[in-house]
Length: 252
Image 1 (cartoon, rainbow, N blue to C red):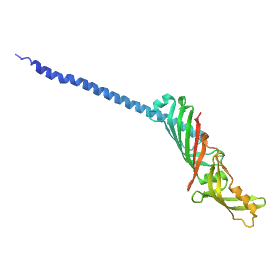
Image 2 (image 1 turned 45 degrees about the horizontal axis):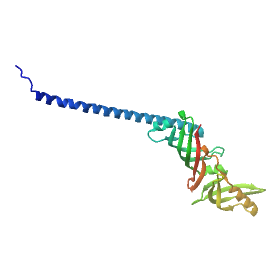
Image 3 (image 1 turned 180 degrees about the vertical axis):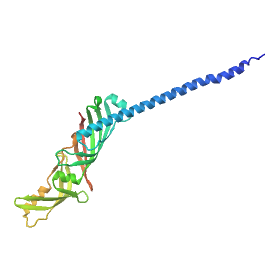
Image 4 (image 1 turned 120 degrees about the horizontal axis):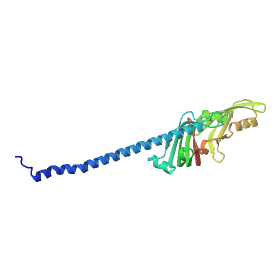
């Protein structure tokens, strides 16, 4: 006849099994939470990339850029930012931006950062409280702006080659100087200028007039998004410009 198992042995056998059930349940809950968090992160990244691609396409169309710009919108988590209709920041990077009505002048290596960005539904309208952008006006672009041959001439200086006719006198020569920014009038001027006329027999008043022609102001008031120049720096590859603005209508 089979003997019954002692009571204390049965209890010892069942107790570990019962204790393992809460542990398995906790593991299931933790795994579920991690999976849900992962899905939320993936969804957040997907929505952000979709929005960035949409804004990049519109910026490219607005500025007539040859390539789609790089756009970074807001911090993580992006969905929280969109829910409030306001992004902490937006960054736009472009290889080249054409300046309208300038004879083909461009600004290259554009890097713009905007803060306090208000976004309407489906990104139909985007306005930034503040913005700052940097880029380079190459010497070919400066030549397009001036209609003259502009080149680097050493530390903080440029050289301008000119040919013109003053009255009945054809005059050719060079002018060197230091580009400075007139912030109020949004234009470039040449300071500390030295003018050399290579044409022979030209009266001094004619030479002076030719120099004034070569050193005339270069307007730079056609920047996109109502940005205004605040500083410049002469480099070997061109003149680096910095521009800032407030209440900038980036789109719409």
